[in-house]
Length: 329
Image (cartoon, rainbow, N blue to C red):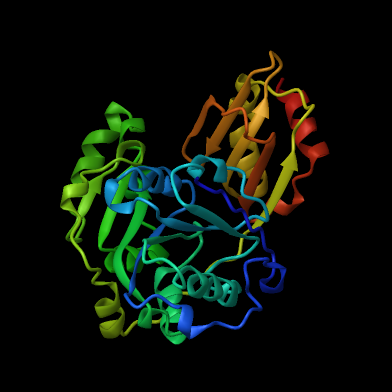
């Protein structure tokens, strides 16, 4: 029976996942375990890509470590039933302060099973920093890095790739471009020209997280790239976040569509996601970045909470959100 194991941790010592237990080498599997990294910019669609990957027969019985920058995982339910185990590290970034917790989880995972492990990083993680942490912890003595995916929104390519993401794209084995379907007709010609000009070997369209799986080749070239990279490792940025319980609030999809540009501008937001219950009782899922907002039907098990990530996201309170809803309602 599939299990869903959510281990929420703001600090390494919060983990219930045998973090403080001594590692027993005798129990470790003999073969190396396949390891996959899924990284990408905030709101690009990393979880959608992971959903697609976990449906492939190659990854039956896979284990997943999800890293959430906020202290709650509001969409972890999406992977339930697709993986043998889903574990969440929340409240920080795996390439920084979650290092110890992450490596302990990986050591636990390789004790009893050689089935693949996926790490889904936060939208602020830096792949090269993460690899450095894993090398220092000698994780690749027990794991073989099979693929490093980087997920990017088509709108970022259109407006110009952020400097911090350039090395991410260089390091990735496969660049997966999402949300091309959301481009307007007037944007598409410029976008196509900029996509053709991308100086990267493997760039694939990934509508709704799905892509041509036959184009993926293993093992990963990321470790070789790391060995030859002579640039500075980027310092991950440190946005703030807020997680609001919005149950009982009067929210409609129309009002939320009106206020999201105001919220993003006022608080320097980069990401908004979660679930709300509309005035007619319908449970709605919302995903928003600076460029677009999408509101769809939510699953019954999704909690009525919204996560805000950005420069001053920690200033957003339930009262502040309620005031915006009244103003634009």
